[in-house]
Length: 124
Ligand SMILES: [Zn+2]
Figure 1 (cartoon, rainbow, N blue to C red):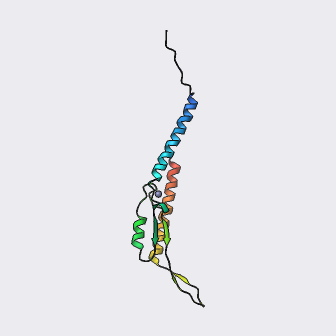
Figure 2: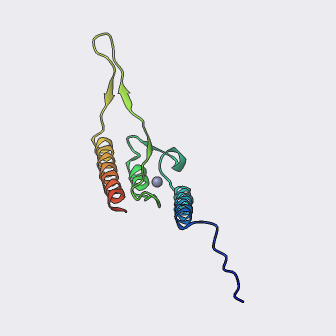
Figure 3: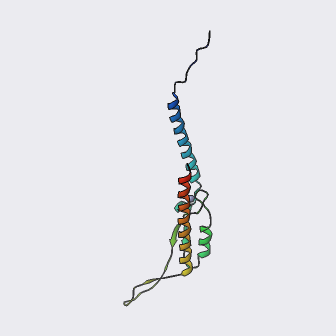
């Protein structure tokens, strides 16, 4: 007498879809775990840029995010205004060093986003 062979109740196709669901859940857990260490945006701290604060801003800009690489900052750009009078309106006083830093930040952020989106396309 041979023992009776019990077949699993789940069919292979069902097993496949369950495995797929588990894999999706695992990747969502991993994604959440990684995002918890992100230092971008408001969560990572607000960074102020103004005349005389260039070095601090550069330091914050060069601090990498462990998740995204280049850190996306939440920036407060504090400006100075030359008061106006009846003949001319008030106008912002431009500081080339500050503007150059903000331009560098925007350029590096765009490069980083482009690189990350290419990474997502090729990550299959
Ligand atoms: Zn980040």
